[in-house]
Image (cartoon, rainbow, N blue to C red):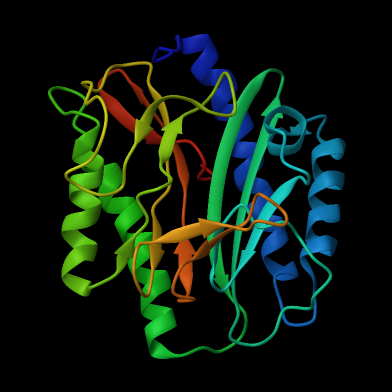
Length: 252
């Protein structure tokens, strides 16, 4: 069941999202050669404590750490390690906060130092696909699957693998809510109309190879590309209010 939020709830979610956007702004200099996922995760724990928030993936979602930090062919749900980042690595950071009962979610893929043109294009295209998915939201008469249609229409001609085993979702009063948001098209499941009060996390995961992925059997969390190809991941939390779409995880 989709949870429709009132203005007070959206205001609270917005504050959580703005704090999350601030965290990404502050952590960006830390994502560099020689640093580690464990060090950045420790920074995230301290950031949350400083602002009286909680890392929602760990506290409310059962994930073992504050952040998901996925490197290279890890798509999502990577558990931070002490392996230093190297030039050319793709480091995808997914972080969520709970602030006063309101939840936010955001992800960015970073390149460490210099990389190949194909990797730079993957990062740029995944970010562009996210924005196209958001722009496809028509609060007057659109439907959820319009998001995946816009994303896949942009990415498919470029021969990327659009991950379909994992999807976007509702958010705001919990870490994950309905509806599920596929980033491909045609896609599975219900196709409800957009409504005022919807808060959605849109997060295309895009591979340089095929779309197939698998979950690590040892840690039971990390999702890898089946063919070992590199992957990128970008995510925003958005709200629909008064017939308009607002990206909440951008700083004003």
